[in-house]
Image (cartoon, rainbow, N blue to C red; front, side):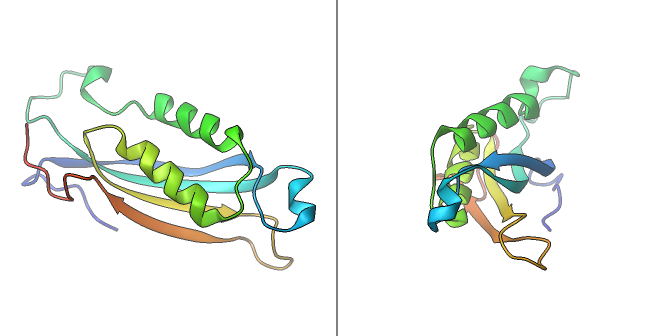
Length: 134
């Protein structure tokens, strides 16, 4: 896992084991009811270079981010965990301070005997993984 880097001025925002109901899947029975999915996010966030003043405006607000993820997941049926992961990564990268987003999406009840099945992706800001500090 990447680490926060003082030389690059980064920190990592983590969301661990967020479980939501999602309408997801390709099979007919998966269209009948939401399924439990577990989401994990690791966002590399550029620091401003200014001393942290214990001010929410200086950081990515994880509560607001999670609410946006909840709305996205609830918005419509998707066939693939890969599609949902891509959409969540794009949502995370909407914030210009986010340099990269590692997103894991796991279906918890899809395969009998498996704790979960899913995918993990990593996507970078359109400006690249190593933005210069502003």
